[in-house]
Length: 367
Ligand code: UD1
Image (cartoon, rainbow, N blue to C red; front, side):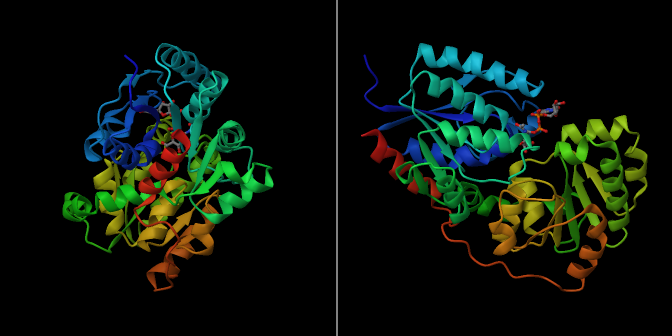
């Protein structure tokens, strides 16, 4: 018998995807017309990079798991296309929702669009204008072929319009990650993760690095490690190390340099609740992440982003984010510690209600 509900595939692949699909999955599960099914491509597979997010965010287990694992860009993209196409051919969904900008996002989009299945992209329109970033290629390709483009901010709408995408395909819905943060606020506030590391609230900074431009470039990685050791003399730092970064640090024998730094805590990637709890109580964040630029802006935590560009310019113009070179970080940390903080402005539609807007828009396209 044909399923009377609309089947909606939610593609989840890598760490930054899970907090984007969780609120949408919950909102769809509450609708009698929707049958949401999570498709996990398996791009991230370590417990702390994947399963722990399903536990923390109360997400139902994936209906399909493609198990693609790590690989080169072509291997990852190709494997997702081949394996996801089989799922699509077996049981055709009414629509596929992809999020963010990882390799699985573009791969699932290509597989579905070529079978004539509608695709909606959540977090569409972001542009760093830097084609050396793998994510930029993924964003441009996904947005150019997806049917529905849900954006987080006005700059994203402008980018899409400039690329000639018709207005009826674009809808500004807000920032879905803020929904996860607000849904989990109680647990985050109760976690007090700083205590596990003997840190005091407001008395430490967080470091995260994983971008290939920083990690896979030996000279750059060494500069970053030296800078982190130096900054840890000014303020205690906690550095949850991404698997890509850990490998590179070990290969370049930089671990001893970091372990010697007394004010620095090196740890494993944190679960969602623990990481957000650390961020809630932190004095500052030093990062090259995309999503962290947004979360710190929302929370009003100063963020130093070691990149030359950002696909999230609103965090710089309206938020607490600042792009910088590695060499500038110690001076900027001094300034933050002596009170130079920019208050964040409230950003329109970053309000914890994005999933509801997405579901309403989805419904109007499905019926
Ligand atoms: C990917 C995304 C990036 C996102 C990041 C968040 C792409 C092109 N990149 O980068 O946009 O910001 O996720 O983390 O899609 N590894 C493990 N365990 C895991 C996952 C990865 O050990 O669970 C190791 C493997 O050695 C792998 C390396 O990390 O080769 C990189 O993983 P990969 O998924 O290719 O890219 P990320 O750097 O995580």
